[in-house]
Amino acid sequence: MGKIFLAGGAGYIGSHTALSLLRSGYEIVTADNYSNSSPEALNRVMELSGKTFKTYEADMTDTSAIAEIFSENEIDAVIHFAGLKAVGESVEKPLEYYRCNLDATLSLLEMMRKYSVKNIIFSSSATVYGGENPSPYREDMSRSACTNPYGWTKFMSEQIIEDTVKAEKNISAILLRYFNPVGADESGMIGEDPLGIPNNLMPCICQTAVGRREKLTIFGRDYDTPDGTCRRDYIHVSDLADGHVKALDYMLGKNSDGKIFEIFNLGTGVPYSVTEIVQTFERVNNIKLNYSYGERRAGDLPECFAEPSRANEVLSWTAKKSLEDMCRDSWNWQSKNPQGYNK
Ligand code: UD1
Image (tube, rainbow, N blue to C red; front, side):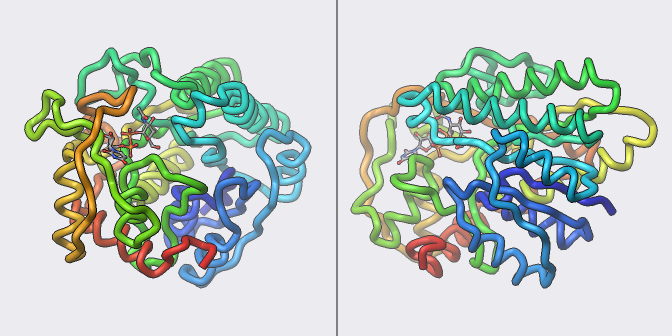
């Protein structure tokens, strides 16, 4: 089993992946600048797994910090979760988003080349399919124009990684395109803890249920979908984390016979509407949510869901958890941690 470096390892997806990797027998090292995450998440990962690991407080745009980590640890693969991710904020601060997210990708790749680290898995997003492809999205569709700078940073990072793999004979990459991650580890000890006002649906639902927000607005009910609200491919974060373990198993297993460049969607392939999410949350948690329907949100697509069969065929990975699990586990985390990691 190899030693895996999680860049941005204290965040929502990073911390769940850290736990899955430890449970699968991998050793890990994490780095995070904690700008939108808490070291407490990693303490809890240690508690849940019964294992310890090295954590660095470091910014992934800082090549000397990465150099230090690579020289102090024998790293077999990097999983690159580091980056800013708020879509609305990226529209207001494009330069900060391009600088941070692209610099992190470039710095990690440059230091991988320098220290002979051969493998990288990148946290990408369904957003790179853009508005021009119809759902279900398949990996062989080309990337198309994104609607915001955040999306473009994923699009451009993918291209940078692809070109680097072509040019560097020793670097392999897997791009994982996430759909809509929700839920939390079933212990309720780690979960999503967004800084400031969340804009994703599930944190908005949870914060409304716990009383941190007065009400939830469902954005638009006049879309061309079965109930008029947008449909998305929600995926439980623990299933998503297992997808990383499967991708690593594949990558490290394959690498002895040559380098790889692969792209996988990580989604369930089953879309649910906003209204279905809200109603399922209310039903499984026995909670009445204060919500109403409002205007459409700019930039939203009516539908976005995956064709997930490639990850199943090549990685033997498939999402196992149901929408009920997602809603129950999200609430389990939020109700046990009403203020997130701030207690
Ligand atoms: C967004 C981003 C995507 C990013 C993903 C994860 C866009 C166009 N896409 O996806 O690039 O990878 O987040 O961070 O921004 N909704 C409400 N009320 C709310 C909040 C959300 O009705 O208060 C609806 C939205 O209109 C949407 C659905 O819930 O239909 C999901 O929204 P959200 O969780 O923000 O994810 P996406 O927009 O799908």
